[in-house]
Image (cartoon, one colour):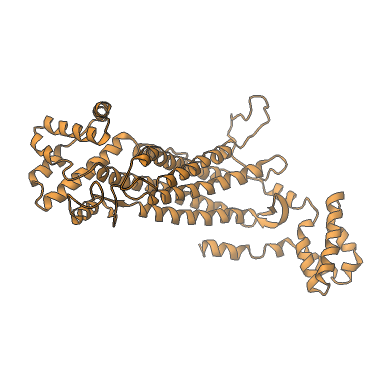
Length: 437
């Protein structure tokens, strides 16, 4: 069992303290890049690096008066420089920059921090899915289409399917995170009126970012929509897993259920209840991330070179989406890790229809043996519908049918109802998904 863990790191990434810390880092990197070019005194850049500081409560107090967060930030930093006896050096703080040079570039740093946690969470989920897939690789289970018994699978195949999708989610998240790893120091309308492009390149390189090839006052928000889309797709998989467990935990099915701890209670009125509350929470919160994607798409179209309609939205959807995705990855990983599986119940459910699930194979074998397909379908369906309606023994009825007996020997009929034959390619599928381990 993997240990329970909490992730305060993700919340800290989106705290005011860390946001202003990243703003400060962008400002200091800008000062140092300009000092290298001789546009800012080297002593001033060094003094800023050594003494520039801020206090969140002071920034908030200034903002309450000036109604501008970046001005409040720069004012608070200037006060810290004055307190350190370095007031003159503060002349070069925020030199040549506009607000969004700092805000957008620093946001890229926050997204990079958040993405590292999310990527680690997805990798952890895949490890658990892989382990449990091999654990149940050969555990027969009825496959269902439209919620109705179809043909046999193994429970391991279901887990392997989720593992493979999680791999695609990981690739998408990495690509979206890389697309977000850009900064911009191009000024108020993106034309580099006050600083040259090579200054932007130097600042971004110092921060581990790439410069956006072209920007307005902001980095274009299709990048952000792509990123939230990757989160929405990831949480859609987590919902898929949780929804499947919810179905399998139904009393009539009871092939698997989420872990129910000692002392846990499922209902205030019914002591017997063991409800899939974790799964339901996963399914519910995944909807919030998907809803945030719509807001991210709405942020793409802004007035001319920029308005701020996207800014207030992102203060909600980026922290909420990354925090929720991180939380749901943890929840789903522990759900799968501790999932209680009932192989004997799976086997009983598989055999519940007394061979009906082999009707497709019987149809194929009759056609291969010489019976016209339309006739074979009619013969098999007649027995199948009678078995459905009367809860009869489909296999026994087939064995006694003279039309079928005239085409298939008893051994061939046995083979048509062979579970091993249905599952003979499971190992090959696993090699496709996992390689040779």
